[in-house]
Length: 407
Image (cartoon, rainbow, N blue to C red; front, side, top):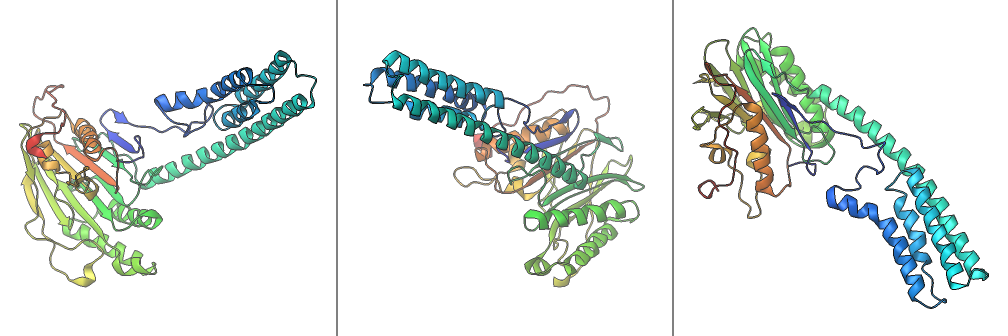
């Protein structure tokens, strides 16, 4: 999934919310590694100094371990703080001095040359450390600003909206990205809770711009348009206006697959309008999973010029204790090592979750196991649950695990 090495995913909803850190202010720079790798890297400067001493002691005086001593502060420079880098250079310089006294070669010109060399390299290491630190701080600041801007485009939904439990999960395929070409939105309106999940064609900044257009139009029109058909047409017109401002391929082939949903207050019903998007799932409290497939296929948003027919809104029962799951094709197109696609309906059938957040957390982990940790496309997940009547606070949870009959 992202990663985003791990950590690309951001969960929003019931009692959750993953943060990110810029990594500055620690004794290592961001990206130095995690776990065992980080510990091994942190030991390298000391190991090199020890190896240099051993080499110098075990070899004739004509041989020198100066390459080890000069490498130690250079490796420490991008990994440690300024003081730790200075300490590494000082230890290396002291080791060279002691070895020459031990070997009785301190009076030779070669000894002075080696000391000056290690001292010079240690000074360069301090300069490199300052440059790396300043670049890291600027990068952390830029990432913070980018995250704030992207969160403004795709904000986290409230945990409860219109009496429903809500959780959203987003994982961007591009490293260090927070959003891409997928989108979700949940909004309480005079017509009930309305929601949208979509996938913009393409990647990069152009896709993010289209996401902003769709979400902006949805937030405005969801409160005013009386039907999902009218809401879809508003989004269609917004994308058409955006297309006229674009050049090249996007002006011709830009489109967005989308599912629009509406949950009227107190009706126990669910209405969906699907514009070429993967079918949502309805998870019942007994583990059953229903695929909410449209009766008639429809073109994605932004392709109205290729043909037109009336949008079809379908209605399903949405009783207490059920959860609606909407997702983008980053979920269904996730492949394992054998090239098999991920099938969310098969993997979730027979499982019970205490709420939307537990569902999305288990689903995201299962996809990561299925793919071996990689992600080829953005993935947006949105789960909306209707609380059960007199439902206990804690219900039995069965995590998603690989099954032979679901592969």
